[in-house]
Image (cartoon, rainbow, N blue to C red; front, side, top):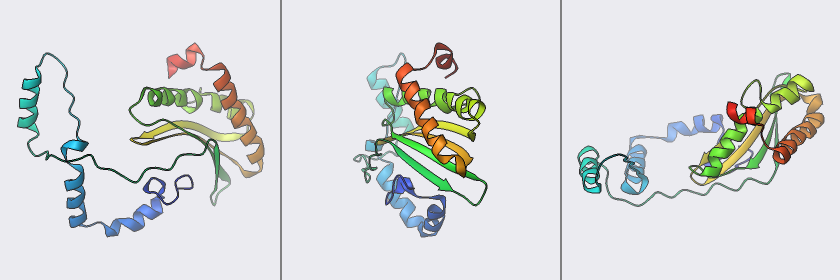
Length: 193
């Protein structure tokens, strides 16, 4: 929510819960009319089939898809080049997120970023966990992910830590990322990703 203020992408769980009572049958039907049209529909067919056969099958099995333009949405704001987001909850643990701009969904770059997020923070043998938790003993847990949509992408690294280690963790996170960018993944890391 701090990364995308004033945009639906940034709604918190609490804001979504407060919004839900505003949804009614009429709004759902309007949404269906807007979204369930040919401009928002992709049908992929592969194999030994002609175009004419494919059209006939599509017409038979998807007769209710109406003709219509692709729906447009309020664009998602661009993510600043590097953005630390700190979140303190009513517990001993704090959360720190390092957010980079990512890649739009359904692209080669987006798939690569998802694989790289797995190398950096996708499991017990990920670089972040091995370095920040096991070697430096700075965090409780670490993760990385690449989230992508039609018109946005974000690469997020998250850790849970003790608040007093915040400055040290920020520095170490950047070092892990910079080393990864400079050296790239190892063959073993790529195999696991």
